[in-house]
Image 1: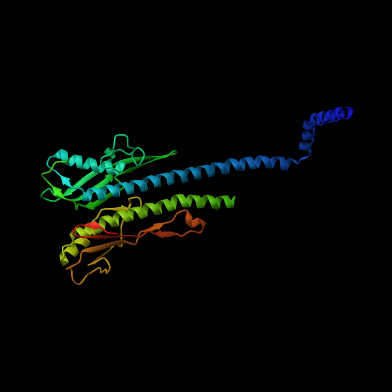
Image 2: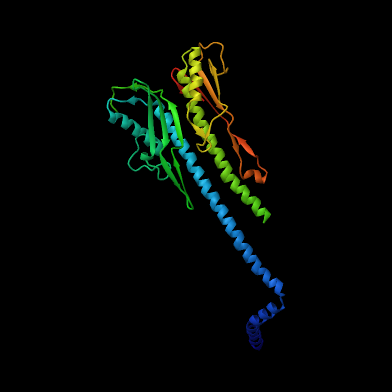
Length: 183
Length: 138
């Protein structure tokens, strides 16, 4: 029992002397060495600033390129679809409905999307896709241009806007049905 | 510090340079697809058709490198069956296939060169199309 008490007392004694020991140790450390910890913090602050901005830039450009690549793919698919789709032009409404189907294919990957479908590329809307038919003198389409009118890639740190690109032009090789209506 | 910088540049190079390489490859492939279909659409079994096919490919307004550069060095070849190719076929009759290659898309590398990577990267693309009816075959 006495031994236990004395051991406990010794432990308490040690605890009470620790701050004093630390202060003593700090007094023993040379001033130059104490200053080094300040240098390390300064270096960390400078390096962290540079590295975080590098990593932020890497993320920003990587994400922007990823979205642009998806836009190129979407516009290319839209161009191919437009090139082979039957061109119905009984009325101006039919031409517009055909263009709307092409825009839907670029944005949703489906010419007739369901109501709850999400765009393949975040925040891209059919209104942001331009479909321009190039016709000969008789009004028959010979080529089709599909492009992105204006799209802003909303990265975390900065936004990039693409206007008029990506853009593709495909020859029209589909069936020309001047008197037909869109179903 | 130098090890971290090396790794940082390598990661930046992967994101920035390889991102651009993939975009250029995609742009070049979409271009050659459109060019091959455009050329095949002009073929009619005559020498004039072959001339029109070459001219139509040269007039395509598509660009690469984030839509900033024109395609150069485009090769348009023709063939009767998709196995033998000639840029100027002696006889135009029976020519129904066209192959378009865009081999000269040389992309400058920005970050990967700092960690021992290449200074430039060539991104080629090739497409084959056939007339009657016009369709992409490759």
